[in-house]
Each structure stands twice: as C-alpha cells, then as structure tokens.
Image (cartoon, rainbow, N blue to C red; front, side, top):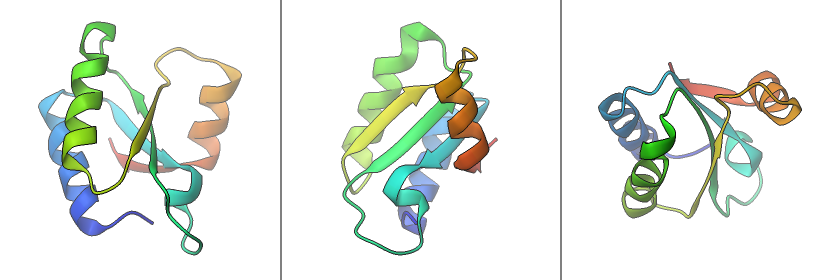
Amino acid sequence: MISDKDKKINLYIAQKYKIKRVILFGSGSKTSGKKRDIDLAVDGLPDKLFFKFYSELIFNLSQPVDLVDISKKTKLSEILISEGIQIYG
C-alpha cells in the first residue's frame, strides 16, 4: 500500500480538483512486494485539468505516478474499478 502521507496528499489534491473518485491499482495496491510507483485511476476530472492535476501528483507524492482517466466506460476502466482500491470518493 502507499504511505499514509501519500494518501493524505492525494486526498488534498483530489478535493482541490473536485474529483469524483480515485482508485489505487498495481503494485501500490498490494500489501507486499516492491512499490516502484503509484498507479492511480481518476474519475470526474475534466480533460482540460488532467495534466495540471497529474503534475501536482508528480511533484508532491513520494514516488513516480502513473495516472489513468476512467471517466469514460471502457473495459480497462471496468477492470480498474472492480480490482483496484478506492482511496477517495
């Protein structure tokens, strides 16, 4: 899992951008194993704010960040929603 500090930072940034929900997936969602990065899926972020939101995560979280937009229903978004861990929203 990601650190409590990173969760708090993520919560603050998600609230700032009025995100609907944030889902943690990948190695960061597992309790064991090496955490190389933080994989996040975001729902409810306007397209024009995607890179601004992403840059805030990159500059404030303790590890590299991968960000996926799941606002549109796709097979990938369905998998991330069902298998990931919702950490906001």
